[in-house]
Length: 359
Image: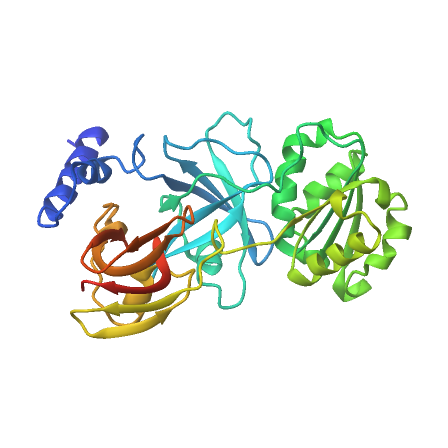
């Protein structure tokens, strides 16, 4: 007779604890092995489904752990996922309805050429995969008092924070114009949903397909949205569009009406990076301010301690003899003078100047 599922899960967790017993851990690490999504653990999530949106984009639905604090539409989260044994962190906008009641969250990502994480999520990740999460952040959101007239200008995957706003607030916005740009009609993410809103007269939609109309020119605003000067505006997309929009609204003396979201690889802007020396191995490398020391060391051939990929937190803690690192989650700087021997987590710390590691 088959064992009940709860008992099987308990035995599996016990086996993981036994396998990790030789690794120096704190008591919470053993709880993480048994219940990685428990309250009080580092925030994780389990992928529930992956739904294609276009040939290169997919919506990833995730059940977050019990520490999830919710979000405001338009905000983003950082997701940590292992690719070929190395953990990578990327930021993605949240796209789900916040009042769904099922406890699930979703992101929508477009696979980009040579993009390790985006291609992994869109093409190679299976439901059931455990990922690391940060809490939602970002100020690309609607104000408490909603504008009488709004304009959304998006391109490519820049639609993702805006679709979150529309799904949650469209019924409360009295007058919405939306211009969306994509290389081709087939590349329009959420195409049917956007057209459905337009068909129901819930918003005015203008699609710009580059293969037909060419790259969108902001000079056409006077024709497409004649009252654009009277609207509060949210813009998200490639850097070229954002730079052009900032210059356009600035020249019109309306910069205070413009809200811009620039995609970025981490929650905070990275520091300047620096020289990392692994004292016992004799390896010195230059690391940028956005790469965890764990990843930089592994890439240079250093045998880095880490229990992260087993779901064991703090297995990557090492001693920094001297130097400075930045916490990639919060931006906080940790420094240590010679002889202080500061303990740091290499999976979330990046070089913020010279640092010497006891490895």
